[in-house]
Image (cartoon, rainbow, N blue to C red; front, side, top):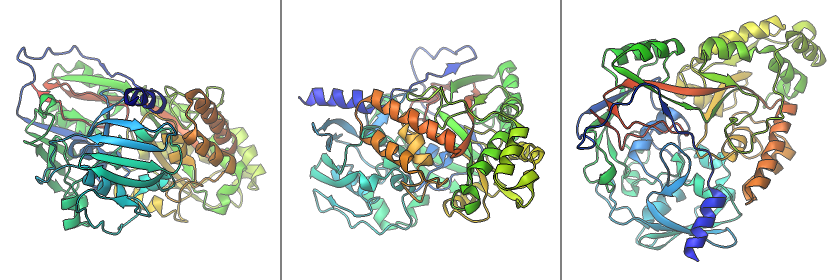
Amino acid sequence: MKKKLLILGLVLFVAMLGCAPKEEAPKVAPAAEGPKKGGTLVFGRGGDSVGLDPAYETDGNSFMVCDNIYEQLVAYKDESTDIEPGLATSWEISPDGLKYTFNLREGVTFHDGTPFNADAVVFSIGRMMKERNVKFFGEGFEIPAQERPPEYWVSMEMDDTVGSIEATGEYTVVFNLKRVEAPFIANMGMDFASIISPTAFVKDPKAFVRNPVGSGPFKFVEWVADDRIVLTAFADYWDKDKGPYLDKVVFRAIPENSVRFLELKAGNVDICQFPNPADVDLARKDPNLKLVSQPGMNVGYLGFNHTKDMWKNVHLRRAVAHAVNRQAIVDNIYQGMGQIAKNGIPPTMWGYNDDVPGYAYDPELAKKELNLAGYPDGEGLPELTLWSMPVPRPYNPEGLKVGIAMLGDMGKAGIRARIVSYDWGTYLKRQREQPDDRDLFQLGWTGDNGDPDNFLAVLFDGLASPAIRTQWKNERYHELMLKGKQTIDQGERARIYREAQQIMFDEVAAIPVAHSTVIWPMRKSVMNFKLHPTASVRMKSVWKE
């Protein structure tokens, strides 16, 4: 019965998306003796991390470091979102779908030398609960008060999902749910569900965000703000057969795409994240470099500040949607590394609604919608603020250039706007606050678990949480999101999400701009680095020739 339940859980609850990356340059055969140990790998990225406590962060620059420090109960397989055991070796799901029992891995230690066990799981996940209905097996821990809302937990309505967490043995944890949650197992592989050292956290909860302690293959050593984060191999890592092979990993923040690529060519960086599209061809011609690529499980979008009365006017939203020339943005800024988006999920994901037509670029139609909105020829419409991202992201190679292009397009339709930008941490923080000085904003998403719920609910259902950036509120859409979570049959879930995408289009909840193709150049000496659909940066099994 246990085996049947485990298989059933995997079939029903695990997302099906998995895209294997393509390595464009000829592969260098590994040495006959297998992976080589030792060496330092320098990863060049577009910006610094915001913080390193995964329960409280939402940005990829933070998570890519956390991916190597922490682990979760379940893990996503290489190059896909299929689930495999992580810190849990197995799990059972009750017939009613409301009880999950995780059997934990023994012999695992955290970087501070303390043991991983059921109490660590109860602490790590329980600290995010608004009402902490938790039970430790041993002496347990006093869970400190939350310093700020755990945004992922809140936006995914986990307080409405998880009723209690109980350690029923030293290596057994039971989650009792309030309702059926179809993507629950997949969610437990996400960064926010990372298991931390309770001992390290309670010593100084405020300092933990910059002094992280997990059980992953690498441990934290140093953080120089806006420059580098340094990790070293964890000598007591439990999964030694698969790594780590590197002695050290350095995450360098190099904001300029072109500078980052030049550092790669010079040999000062081993992997270059988000190159300029023009640099991809240069990388192909360089005998010391190779490329790996993968269709992105992502979406870049332009959002409205739905908390302002002005943006409750659907005609005004539609005017902006038809004013923006997304094809020109994809052609001139993505330069072949993306495609126009018409939905809030990528076309490779199950549940995608291909019947949604998307917003045509039509300046004349934009002017008509502007008139219907009560602003003939733009008269009476104040100058808008368009928040543009200061760092490259997987779904948007150059936020400021995209913003400038949008300003020019909107101006042709009589919509005046100016660009606003901040450093990355402030940009994300101020968006959470829903300020009145924000009208339009660029943002995007790389999927966490291959489930449409992780895009459509987490990004756009403003009735689910005040933490959701768009704060678009639509009762029917919210009903569909709840139904999608609580429906087991994937075919029925797909129908639910297709209807939701049509509502998004009709109501202009946001403007999907593009889905990018992820292409990263690297030194040929880097072996076994694999892109992942979730944009995780995994160094566990990477080695250098």
